Image 1 (cartoon, protein in one colour):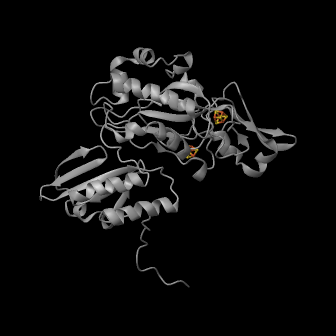
Image 2 (spheres, protein in one colour):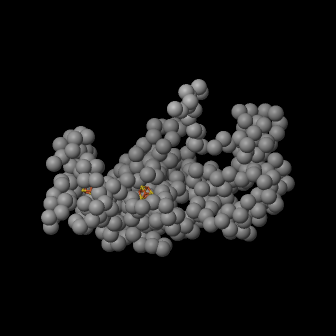
Image 3 (cartoon, helix red, strand yellow):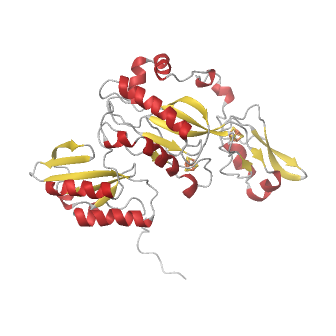
Length: 360
Ligand code: SF4
Ligand code: SF4
């Protein structure tokens, strides 16, 4: 018989690691004591503490999904030119801190010579955040870090300079489930056809009730096809969201021609000056065209430079559009406005799957 348990079972903490042991000692010592911070130049943050200590942080862009050699070269730079401390921001910028101002310029030069652009601070286009893409997720219809690399090559000048009205956060998402969140400008996959079902696979791979329950518009029903249990889709209801594909890969929705890209604008997670906002679709049906996605880059630049040239200082993309109105936004950017842009949720109570019941 097992021994009686004398100690309560403790949870295993496997969440975010404690950042303090890895933090630059000056940052650690002055945690909560900062007097002010400024930016001596794009890509450099300067923090001054009430204790009189100062720290400079140099920010460099990376491609996020990095090979070992690239990470090693960044770490070598941090060891040789700085104090050996490096961190990555949520948007894949590498930040290296130094407590001595004379180390800032050599550090910037070393980063630039190794191919890492220095910038991404203040009112610039900082690194694009992206979802996992072909490398790490099993359902994407497009790549993620590839899009980021291609777009950031086009927007390099906006990363190394601070000449936007406010910061611009661009995001990319490789399926419509969009685990990536909101962006001032967001590039998201948009499926345009219902899934094609591989009926001979469904019974072996899919749990049919969970697939049926997953559909947001109740378009999926169980069916028997060629004597085997399978599923069928009411194509007049299907909104081609792709939600059935992850739990049931035989519901093939990714398609080189019909999986398009759409651009959304005005999303914002933050509470600064205003409430968070959802982004809204402004361009649809762009080809999913690796490895450089030129059609997407063209539209993104059109929106970005119209914003840069017309928004007031400190306005984020969404705030600018809110002020000028959507009609003016489409006029100024020259983007076509179609009936597909309008969704006022009229009739959504009947249209959307609002219950957890399975439909047979
Ligand atoms: S956006 Fe979709 S495909 Fe891309 S990583 Fe997230 S869940 Fe996977
Ligand atoms: S889950 Fe989405 S893609 Fe699948 S059938 Fe329903 S609406 Fe269509």
